[in-house]
Amino acid sequence: MAYGISTYAYFWRISARAPEPMTLTAMLRDTAELGGEVFQICDYAPVESYDAKQLADVRATAADLGLRLELGTRGIRPEHLLTYLDMAGELGVTLVRSMLNTAGHRPDTTEAVALLKEAVSHYADAGVTLGLETYEQVATDDLMTVVRAVDDPHLGVVLDPGNSVARLERPADVVAATASHVVNIHVKDFAFTRRDGWVGFTYAGCPLGEGLLDYDGMIAAVRPQERGINQIVEHWLPWQDEGYDATARLEHQWTQHSITTLLRSK
View: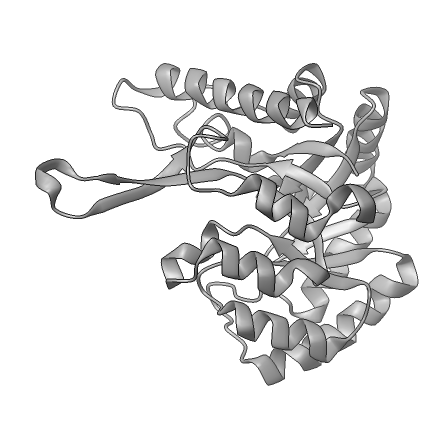
């Protein structure tokens, strides 16, 4: 098991709002400096345009920094998943995270099983595990129906219990339903705060340990140390009214706090 950081922990610093968005190399170096052991390149569109030399450079940089790499994308069409499998081979990656839906494709459970059976066999042959993330667009029961029907140890669940709250699923229930099939954990805390005038709530991220995430309960259920499951830091940091510099500074603080907290739990 290793503790690491995702591109999602750099959400604002790689966004179009950044005067000079961080490069992938800069994120890798920052992760190593913060003590991370793995970096998950997740939903990072530029990597799809990298040629073999660029991918080799990323792999070499990560190796020089003592980092393992993981990949993340969205969608389950076989041709797309096989593109990421090829990329995984170039990068030395053994775990790829995906999601069932994309903007243009929302398969039902029957279609999802058929598509994944075609792709996962190739993942198994390559020794790469595919993890499907828990999130609000897909009921956790449906996600588990798909994973169980494919019935391959190279297909599992990327657990992010905060995502499914928007579907009115309790985080503890998501953890209990998926624990035995989890292959990767996204660690981010979350909380509700009242809106001005007490008209509703804002549901957003908060520093690890200050919100509703029952981290200890999740770890007890999943047993990542025993099962070799990596834990990856992410955030839901709202944009700060003071602007980019304040947002970037707080994003760094949250990342540092999260990875330090995880490393201390070893």
